[in-house]
Length: 464
Image (cartoon, rainbow, N blue to C red; front, top):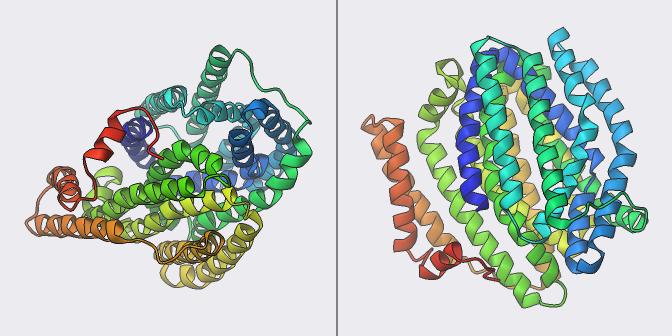
């Protein structure tokens, strides 16, 4: 359900993003994407890792789940004020013109209403995707309709900001009412588990803040050094990477509680679940990378128009980063489950330093392509360090890579076919159709997927 619904939302999101880009142009979209990056990084401190911690602890202690969720809500209430002040200051420093400033202020003012997102943890703990997917789809449809109207009237940053705020508030309200109907009551702000939650969440939150920083700071570097035009080019292609996060999010949303509940009582179950997760992530990310390498030009041209064609070379580079990001989601969850959040903090700090130094050197030399390259380098550093930490903690031997190798070969063969079609001047529709048929056939032919996996997909239940 997660994957299917998110694929539909991804398709709608790509269409909507194309309209936003075409409405605002390179400079306007550069400003819009920079606002989004700055606010997402700073606003992270209003949650500060507490939701992940509350989810883990509630999965281990179901009888106290409302105490943990209440503590998460209380911490958010305590942090939201300082976060809003910091966001307003950042927008004031970066704003290029009144429109960018006003749009940023609108997005900041409604931040307190985002706290009801914590209620989504109730559904995640029960592996119930229906309401969260309904809310996601509702937001996507409303946002899409608003963007169509704004595009037709040649609107700008301020109308987009108002529309985004309105659609998010509608979605949050629906989720809150659904939680009340399904569970009979809401978690209330509580101090019962606040101190314990804060103690565990501080290293997790700092790690998350560093991850957000090194993942998004490249957009600010491009904006500040190369200008809003290059920031618009980079932001448009990076948005595709952002949208693609639905893959690891969908898989880990379902499997995170399973991982948390398995450790430390059932090490074998933890390893089985982690292996399954890694294999699913490989199937999605390897295929995505192969398609990005072969079809980056047509994809960027179709979505954003010929004016953004110069951004196409960055898409395969970010596709490589996406592979590492997918496995980074898994490693990050495992480190949290294993209680190694302090070591994750050190890895994140190292990654931020590497990213800052690399962007400071490469962006002035090669513009947004330098930022894309540093995304790959940074994610590679994170993946290598976290993999070593997990292997040592679980005393793992040599990893079993037979299925991963067969997945990589299937993606390679599919990519080779796409390249041949490109040489024959095949349209993008033909490339998509070929990939949709050839890649699953190769996966089944090479026994990456089989009848057991199909049964798992169509039946409710956990393979772990």
